[in-house]
Amino acid sequence: MEQRYLDHIMKQPCHAYTAADHAVWRTLFATQAGILQGRACKEFIAGLHGLDMAADGIPRFDALNELLHAATGWRIVAVPGLVPDDVFFGLLANRHFPASWWIRKPAQMDYLQEPDVFHDIYGHVPLLMNPIFADYMQAYGEGGLRSNCLNSLGRLARLYWYTVEFGLINTAEGLRIYGSGILSSKGESIYSLESAAPNRVQFDLQRVMSTRYRIDSFQKTYFVIDSFKALFEATEADLAPIYRALEKTADIGAEALLANDRVLQRGTGDGWQSTRDTG
Image 1 (cartoon, rainbow, N blue to C red):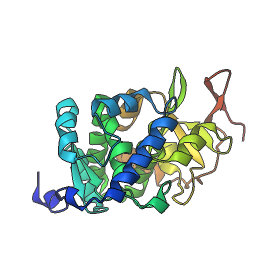
Image 2: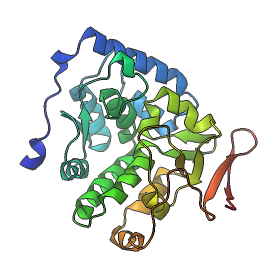
Image 3: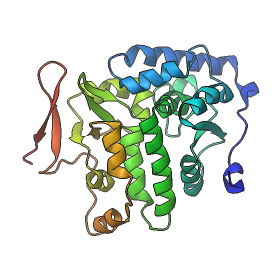
Image 4: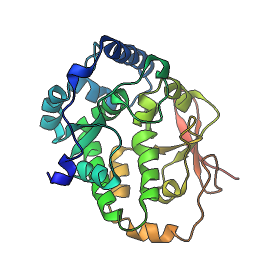
């Protein structure tokens, strides 16, 4: 790996964790373990079990890496905080996931503006055990490196936000969560699937890249994919033509619905049906 990436990573300081830090992990883990049954996608649950992620305290990255690298070639690397865009994309392109090592305080159990170790490790890493999603994340990093000189990082950030962080997936059992920002949040795990307030719109790449998002509240709109394979195929191509097309279009508000949106509404049982919104 290039030195410019190595300069931003560090050894996980396991000695720095206090008993209170491990207690916060245990509380968060136990809470989400109960809430996510029947709400998280099966690939997340499988990854959690495959990593043998423990409920008893903050895990060691090197122990997780033995299982993760054997499964999909990915590794977790500790970072002191947010890293520059080019470093972030470069790490992903090299199948290295940058993870915060510190954990939130007890007063911050359900909301943080900056990701901590629970968000990054519990929320993100289990899906990296899935080969297709692991490839998507690498492709996203490669796309970011290509886009870094196209003045399009804002568009690409929206794709990450509405998929990796706050994505939903439609399954035979109903809508399920795969976005880490939801998976690591008690309140949004329930709200994203059960509240009548947010829009749930079928994923469309240009629609997603045109849509603003909120960082100070639960999401106003969730985009729903049909499969990780479909997500990968929709985003693996060169995005430069899409960026050029979007230069001529206006941004869409986080809460807006368009006349041609395919809006998912709950049908009978656990099923969700896609309908055209009439505006």
